[in-house]
Length: 164
Image (tube, rainbow, N blue to C red; front, side, top):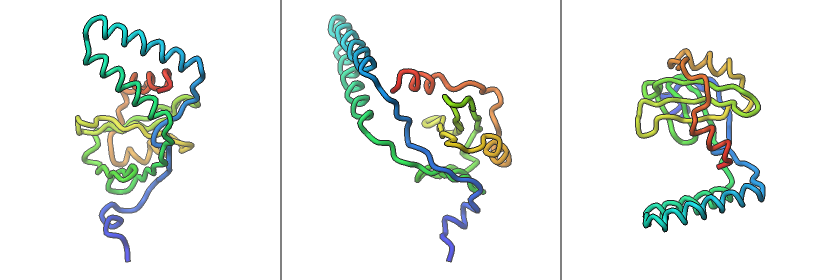
């Protein structure tokens, strides 16, 4: 007997797994620069009596340091006839605005899915060895490609460059 979700979603056309987030090797120099920056920002926040800013800096520092200790979970992406399943979330094709792929190995090999939902406008999925042409050709059967996007989004670039 087939799973009800399998019947509704259709056949699995392509799947792979990828880490929940990228991990980076941080050197002692990175930590020194990080804490100097945090110290300067905290000094500015206190000197300008921006206590809310100081609290935000402190919270952000704690989150970054705790996040660094966490091991990324492995997520699966399944491109099926009815939509795309990423981890335990399913996006029907009608919920997806468009997609684009940035393939500049070894730095960036990523599928970007743009959703119609403004609360979560973009999902980044590492290709992890998948052939980008095969992924693109498959997705073109269901959703539009955003051909105007040919660079990695600035936020993703900054996260990678700053090793956050």
